Length: 290
Image: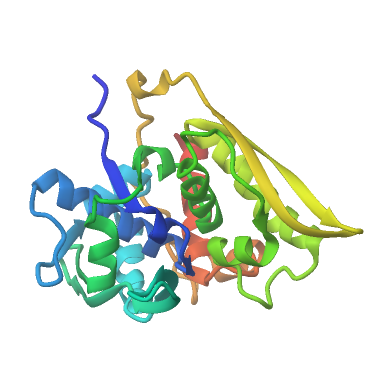
């Protein structure tokens, strides 16, 4: 039997905001919004939302031990994360708003549970319904192992009605994907390490197939636009592959999620933390075994 869709709702202002989140932090925020809708509790600035390690493990097809460690690590960085967006002031001027994602975050030892409280700006952007917002099934991003891929999918799906995007200026696009100013400054690095990788993951793991066009001024690329189509979905009725139940073991100093430090260093992408790189390697290994 197909699972009921776990719907994520985001205001398009938040979709287009500039921010950087690790993969686990991004997944934690997405799962929190889904759980709030499923439980009927709503999202407020004073009521904690909880995500349990076993639910995280099932959703993203990782071992329970990897989920425990990922959620615990995420609580450290998430409290410091910020995002920036623009809105119109009462006088019609552009107001640049900077906000944190959460006002409180906690991890319960021995229970594998994270609780978070969103800030007023996030609550407002997630819950308001008077403007355009984007809905999508959490399952669509569960197979994505890069934060760039998740962000690209969200950006594209916000234009689902049209099946294409307008041209997005390069500097704006980099901010929306969460690429820092000093990362992938050369275009061939940006395309190979960020854009092409994200397109490949989106096409292989979600309900859309996308391609991009690059726009130039002279010989310099100044922006990108995208066309995409929805796949005919049949996978919703297919049984899930079983996830591994036994985590890899390693006593090596510096190992994360059972992966040796040397292996993490060799495979880590420039923008990834060690935890994100280890988590990605662990998930890829899990999928190969499944």
